[in-house]
Length: 313
Image 1 (tube, rainbow, N blue to C red):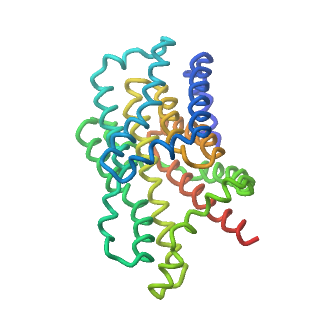
Image 2 (tube, rainbow, N blue to C red):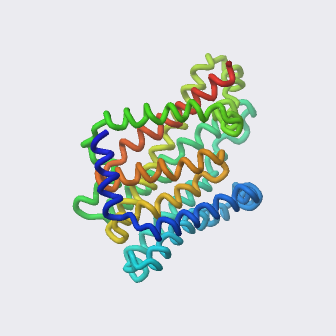
Image 3 (cartoon, rainbow, N blue to C red):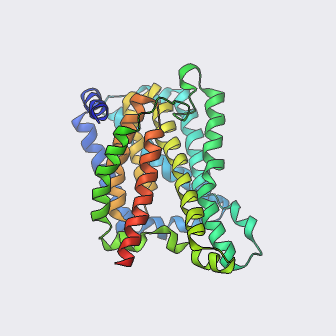
């Protein structure tokens, strides 16, 4: 835990700028308010769902806050090189095209056409989570091998094996207290557990399976999606851009990460800012995303468990 605190102190010492942080906070607060007040995520972006247009829409949606943060860096005179950097624009285009494609991915649905509804719905939901291993992680690995050199060719934090799990276990334990409290909130209780909306019970009954089998299938698929989340946000958006933006890449990443949570409970969206910030700083100094992967999986599964227990009691 001392290491993590040390990273936070070093980062704030080197990269905390009151004006920039205040402007970024105001920008994010305005975006969060507009999204949740007008329900932009559902009322506007859902019209592109399951179409090729969704790819472009999601790419632009995720790229917008990242670019706005870079513009704020330029305005405050903190980083201006990015505007004329071919490296920046190449990485910007590649990263958000991949992220938008993964967010708008729907081709897996064709695999289950013609199946009974009890089977197809559960398999589509489970496959959708696991698909990001192929439509995001695999492309990012290829990109890393093609454009990165030397020590940066570490698969955006996947290859770095110097991983001390103890600080992350403590961090997850602390986080679990807040998750347990948050599970009492009505908005979160209505959103979790995600498994209950997968029709896993119907799939188990139709295929003569014990329900623990469908729970295991779904939760493993759900957990696997966080490998891709950490690789694109804490890996690619921090490590690939840190050579251009320095440590400020963490703040730019956080704004885009916040937008990823639009459509989820408001409390989860706000907490993603702080969680993404801490994990981004750790990834910036360690060049390793495994801690973030395990914490993210742990948080997701704990939310499932706490919400399930709320339903029982």
